[in-house]
Amino acid sequence: MKSISVINSRKARFSLLGIILFALVGCSAPRSTFYWGEYESMLYGMYLEPGSADSATQIAILQEDIQKSKSMGMRIAPGIHAHLGYMYALEGNMPQAKAELILEKNLFPESATLIDGMLTRIERKNNDVN
Image (spheres, helix red, strand yellow):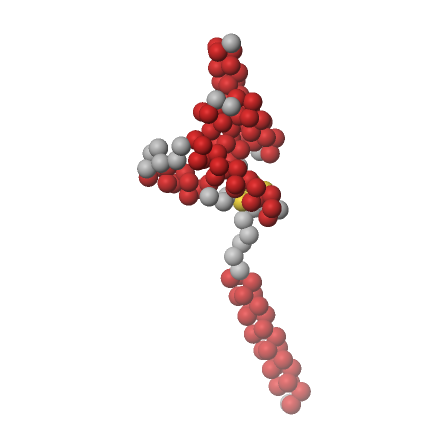
């Protein structure tokens, strides 16, 4: 009888330990696949106060986010290079705008249709100017 109660108490302890470990693992925060940095809060702020961040400010924020993602060894979030390319286009820096858009397309091939359309518009604008 004594051996059966020892076995049952061991099973109970192992079961309790398993439940506790399972609960602790379930409480850990999932690690994000991408680094978002200040991008989301910048966009939200711009929706609340349109014009609150000019293109130069946005370029600085996005470049800093890209550098931080590299230093942390994380992938930059989708859309950040496209947004940066758009800001460069607004500043008139078309070569850098194209480079950022192409980088976005290479990193996120599913964005090809959108990015190709943006690149076509940049080319048209360049041809109209020349």
